[in-house]
Length: 414
Image 1 (spheres, helix red, strand yellow):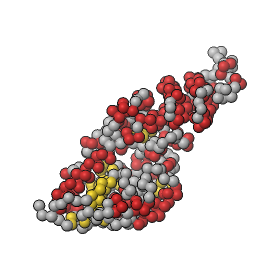
Image 2 (tube, helix red, strand yellow):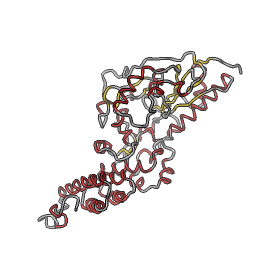
Image 3 (tube, one colour):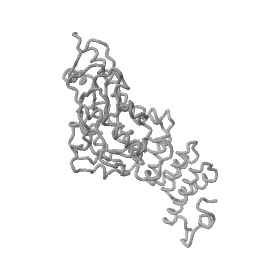
Image 4 (cartoon, one colour):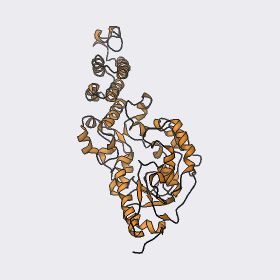
């Protein structure tokens, strides 16, 4: 095969389709100087800790690959027709959680990385030499959405998501830095919301009002981040979480630009029923090994079972199912602070005499000040719910049972 110094997208598209990448574009490897202000503003609002720390390195692709001449970008659609149906049909009769549709199938990091690596091999064969390349999927210094936008892969909406003209925002983004020049690579300026018009449904529908401007997010307030963060979930975000145990799709679901888009037909993203709506009680009973057996193929497995169990406890608190009290109460004795705190909050939300009894017993031996405060508040909440439901009254309804009367001590049962 004759060697090539330069390629075009027409040369590469058949190779991309062979490895399962239906949507590709390209830009040059020059620095993203236009990111200086947005990254500074983002830093001021507060990073999540998941990002690359050095903004200068995020702006220069050659930090990642010094020999880079071009960046190929890929949009991999993941929302299948069955996935869209599952997303709409929430089970109502079971104690189940809810996840973002991007975790219904296989872990996109692995799928997309493998396909981009395969594409790099084919490009090397086409140019007749071993090329220098780097694969970037979500964990590189690059700002994936801006790289994709500059390449012409799609546009960025007011919800900050990149929209593919064919598949909407339900796409995974990846990039392949290569030391080969692509002649028709684009270098488009940023234009957030240019296809959105006056619509701001995504911003108004956000459960935590995390958007500060079109395309600008207070990332630490986004429920997708909250479900992945370490530690105790801030109280302001617990009720907005609802039954979510991983991710949030609201800003995509309400978007008119996502209507009537093509569905993915990729078998890698065939939805798993348990991953879409996990059984919360089953999840709370899992060891880490059992969790990985059940969810190891999913993109939500990387955080491990304890993070998902913390989220499940909050979800059960929001569902307020009294039959969940025994399983929730077991976590009051956990060795993890965030699990004890979440269990306490959940029992306070569920309320009732059983929840109250478990909380008072656990409070007597709790040493952590943050958890003690959670328990105190939960006891007050549970006791109030018991009173509202007349659970604190005797059989004749003439008054409170002596052991439950508030005058027996403060609401912490001391």
